[in-house]
Length: 218
Image (cartoon, rainbow, N blue to C red):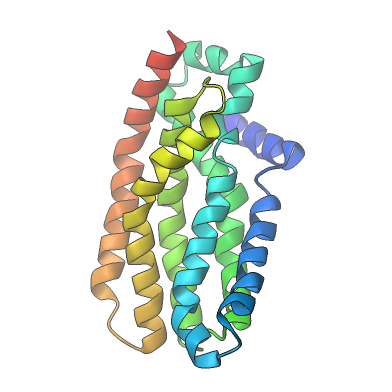
């Protein structure tokens, strides 16, 4: 599993589309929002948690089609299916590699970009906490979508349509944690819901993704 993880990390850096591109897209979204809504500091501070979460979600979505597509194209996925490593372990490593190269950088850059949106001082920690807790769910759900559409021509658009509705609960509770934290309100309930979603998909979706891949590889 470690060897597979290191291989996927190297491929993500060399092939592009994940590491770096997501950060650039996140930066572009954050910079463009003040131009669109105006320079009102009060308005920007109110919408900052939601904007940061939407930007992170869309940045994660950019690289989902590369999670399994490269392995499908060069035949590596067939070899992985016959390897001693269970398919559930393969998709878990794929999701972890995607999170390390895409989700984790977004977690650390989000508080910095919050300055551009006049994010209240109390919100920086909660934006970081909510993204750190929620982005793993985005990667695992995205891996499930990639497994559903692997091998399909122009499957990226179909995958986006399938994955976006599944992202909505994570987006709602993640943005709510950041918003309540910025306003100085209690965050226990949305934080617990966000944690439940992340732990639930991490525990269940690798099995669903592995089952779908086995069907697609037949």
